[in-house]
Length: 148
Image 1 (cartoon, one colour):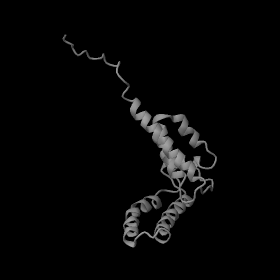
Image 2 (tube, one colour):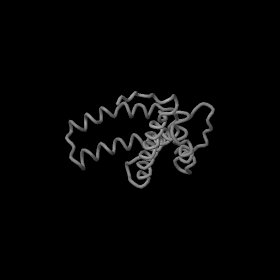
Image 3 (cartoon, rainbow, N blue to C red):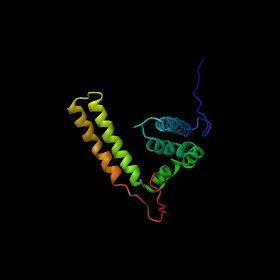
Image 4 (spheres, rainbow, N blue to C red):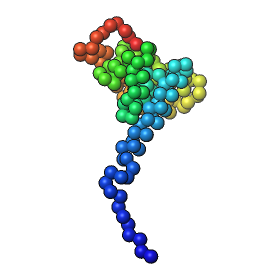
């Protein structure tokens, strides 16, 4: 018995946009969860993880991005970065301090070999440069003195 291959008519197959949306939703959930844990765990940053979560939610579930934006403490810095590329001075200080403290803990508490710590520190130099070169306010953005 011979079987002919019959093609599905256009548009009747699985939605090719579904897979990326699902992946983005899962990534958003992962980064939101990490950021939420960071609220209570020192050196685990909330805002950078929530920036990533909002980025992925914007592509999969915009209402979840909007909920992050509406958070009373962390929503403004997330929105400012994603919409204007802005990091507050306090945010920059927290990021650079967190990187430095993380390296120090790795070396002194966990006895990371000096060469490994140096390699990690050198790899983090571009991250620090990126952070410190972000504007603190965007053109046309109100500066209400909030340094979060």
